[in-house]
Image (cartoon, rainbow, N blue to C red; front, side):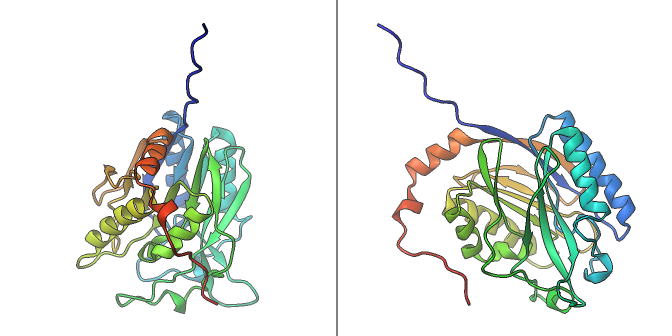
Length: 277
């Protein structure tokens, strides 16, 4: 009598979390990102996640003065490094506005391990809160754009950005599109209660969606840092302080499936999420 076949192994995906300090010097920022790629390659990561505005940042506000096109130096460097190392990358950047608008676009680009640009997410919820006014400098992304989801190492990653984390429907829309891992590049502004909000919201998005959350913040002046990786059951497996650092963790696909079997809240839901016209 032959032995029963073993169940298929669920994927484990290795993620390098790069909590970088980003300046207004684009050349220097590219060098910092190249160092992060070297770390990701050395640890045999499948994907490198960079913060929001990784190409150039000013804590007073980012606009057209920091915008580069998709064929500009920053994204070209990402594609070259991904191709050379085999490490996919999700990175915040700033793009020129469309249609002659003087404002820029806050975006996250997705590059696969072959160096192909496979997606762009344009931030929907601009940070017009807590005394900030991103909409003075930036154009929001279209609310009805298809969610940015992509397969990396057998898990489906979905992308949102910074202030989007405060809107649970943004994360749920990604999960409805198949996301098992929610990636949140951010330059989360510092201030009273802000670090607590960041951590609490990341954990909540994980629990309510039974999804892993990879929340990657910037370090430095005016921002919170404190990147974290949260399991689908809400357990925080990696948490950084305010200083720049690069760490690598494994996401366990089998554990994700177990959580969803034990807590079938996605199957039990009675409402859907649709974009506001």
